[in-house]
Image (cartoon, rainbow, N blue to C red; front, side, top):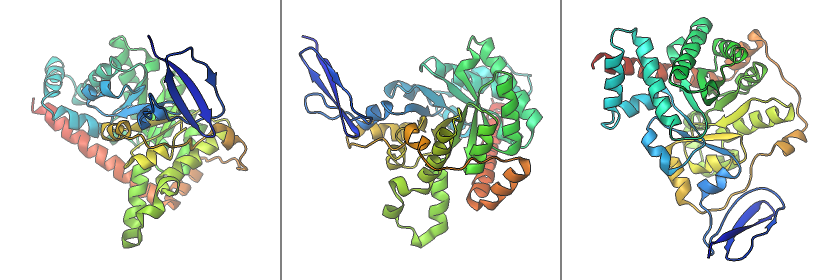
Length: 355
């Protein structure tokens, strides 16, 4: 006899019971825990009921066990992947095939090859990043974004399945705005401040990736011995608070840009953002979520945001640059992130030259 499910949602939790009788559904609110013969649904499956789960990895062979909707990559993740024995032949094949082409083109072809492999395993989109060394060059960023999309299309991948990742500098946001105008969807990354998010919303980019963990890292380091982890956990985490502020602003004012929390350090940060549009999560933390059955509740709601008493905000270039400068954390982490991605891009260049 087949087992069928019946769903009960009470207060902010959902329980799923599996029965050998005809199912019926009774729904009252939002969040999700589940049980099969008194067994609770794991946190990963529960999170998928509230938020689009995205895998943050270049190691596409890990994707199957977590079944994410989308996936994200960056230069550091690709560098890490190509140093593994499983992926070295892929890099060697791409470099050999396109030997003689400009090195930046060979890198883009390698990134697209990884993206195509990822897209063969997921139903949704992959994010592929423009070289961080172009973060302050609008024209070059636009050209690289267009080339990445053209390379994907040459492999039979529709543009709708690709997000071009661009650093959320003013120059990057301007480039992304033009890409969107041309039908290329973008993911604005290295986002640490409210002013970056507002400018991205004004540019009508497809998606932003505020970096929860790196914000947390800065405040923890800044506090030093005065930092008390328990006092800064969950909803009190500064990275979580940053994403919540952005999410509520977007939903309050009908901004269509998707919010995807990124760069997590622990599963508490993830569950504190349950209900966010998307969350991109490393395989290590996906595994921890899959292994945990602890219940959690919806943390973010568009309906709740629309009821908030918030004021509209806009930035021109001068206002954006001043607001970013006033935010020491965001200024430092943006610069640090660009430098780190640029270093890894150079290392990737060197590995390709050595083939």
